[in-house]
Length: 276
Image (tube, rainbow, N blue to C red):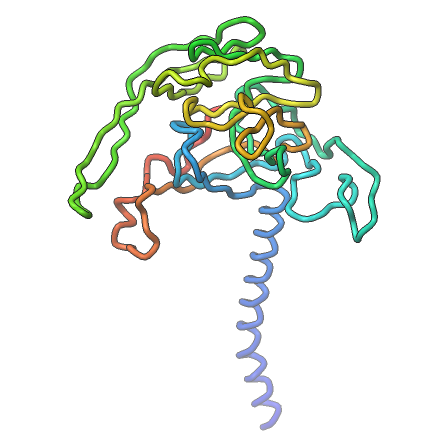
């Protein structure tokens, strides 16, 4: 009798333990994928509008250019960081490289000023390039990048419901830029701004020049390295290439107001591949 009771108890516990093992394995797989392959990021600013908008959630491919010094959020000794209080052998290269950064790629990188803050911009200038903006037109190595005026972007403010706020529509001029390698994307140019005219930037070896697609609302490589500027971005600061948007919601969306989720979700942006 005692044996039968014990066997029955074991039979009840086995399904529970199998479920626990499946959950643990799934969590471990998700952890490995996030750390080494695809890391999720969300967009906190409008510097990459219209390509990326506040409320977009995207995956960044960390294998695009291999692993570098700042690919992980923890200290890795063989990349030149301090390990257990001992300075390791410096290494400024990358390992497991699948490719090189290309002009037009949308990249996540660590801000050179602090090597901690994640930024996302479009790669415009390769090492050795000369980059300049003149009257809002991008020049690469002395040649103007093709720029075509397209339909305006309509941005709506206010919902007309809460606080009796009126719905205001703002028309923003849009341009389609096509880089020398054929990568094409849309930029915003709201009004004349000081950043529409710059000096000639000579990109140093081992560095890149980044621009936001929202040209009048982007702190990028046009501004010197600092708390409010990017400057040139070293190769080792690259985290990975933005690949696709897996979820998106409006800026007004609230986690608590679940009844608004269907209307606040940007369904047309889900699983959208990122140009570049």
